[in-house]
Image 1 (cartoon, rainbow, N blue to C red):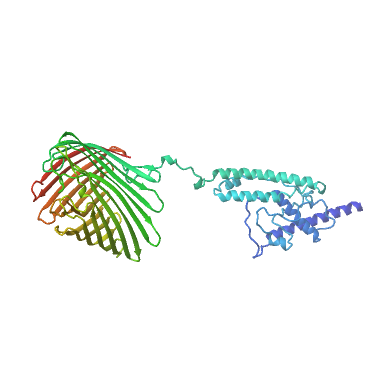
Image 2: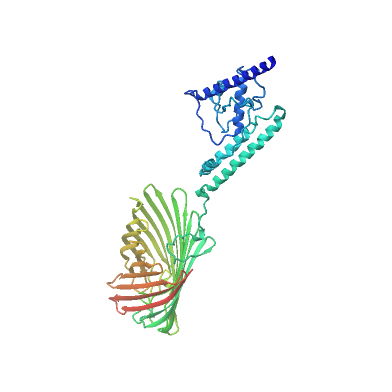
Length: 599
């Protein structure tokens, strides 16, 4: 009996000790946390293995401090958990009570005092994530949720070393593998929740499907009917061919001209360079007229000209030009020959080279030019010919321009011209020396206001004195203009003017000065409909007499583009010459209709 009583006393004593432990745990739960305790946010769910590991750690700490009775059953708590608690969230730090050696824990579970098996801890069944937790986890739609989920998986793998408390020390290795499998299973449940949440996330705007490029609206062209051009080497070539018929009341624009229907063919082209720094431009035209009915006309004329711009060092720029022109002598020219089947052909070869220099606001330009005219023979109606070689001459000129830039849009300038005209034959058929010296001075202004207004205008005086003292010098005011004005988009107004000295081989006469002016207008009524008009005024002043000619002209036309490459064009023109010299007056009216093709 004494032995049984001793065992009973011992058991009661163990139960009393366990009750004291439970009481201490309850008091620890009610103890207020220190003000400086760390507050951490638990991210994600905590596994049961971590809770059990925490309980085992607290029991081990109590045993080490001697708080547990030596007679307490050794199987009450199995110390097989890892030495330290691994937080589930990466970056978390231990609680203050862990560093201070506290013996209580919020994870400690109360034990029943009347349970005979209370001294043996029963492993709790692992809880599966609740439906509410799954919904809360799936509600995360931002991309940061997936990153946190990956962090949780890594933390779970680290915490997977915690094993069940019922595993013995002899089977610790097997228990580690079992806990790792359980953690993997728990992670798979969480992965399922993460996959659902990822499916519910919104797409990144940068990854959304965009519309087809073909379906996007193309930017409209500024001029959908402009010639596209053909690339030849480094040049863009734009040819235009125009074929039509002209009905005119005066076929050769002379005082004796008659009506006719003419077939007209015109070829024009431009070639623009596509270079990085310098530039080049080539332009040309050719016109052919043949009689369909009425007065006999068969002539051709044309011109080709090239310009090269080269930028040199030190604000220096070079401009070179070269051109060739061929055209029959006009029947209204003062040197026209009467009674011929065709007027003599006049050919001109000209070229120039200029240098431009800018020094601060000062602008300097020096240009040298050469122009050579040579004439063919005139064919008379009786089959004979008249030589025109005594009219062949070459004009050499040098022009110096000095300007001051008041603003980028306004540059006044002065210009001085010196020249010499040399005839191939020192004396003409009548024995006159036709060579002469040229002198001119002008003042004007350059305008550069972009597309609104650009060009230049100048006035001055021009004089050309012949070597033969019997012939008076050709002199008079000089007017030159080349302006373009655009009052509104699609409308271009142009003004051109020039002063030319016309020489002659008529006995006793020096020649004349011809002033020519053109006012042109172009209006784009619609994208495929363009209207154009022109007014012309020519004044010819004969030197050594009071003779003069006045030529007035007007023209209006329309071009209707069928597509980018072809269009219909028509124009009406009237021209009238009035002179105080006999046999020079005439009037010519004409109507043209044709087809224009461009590329």
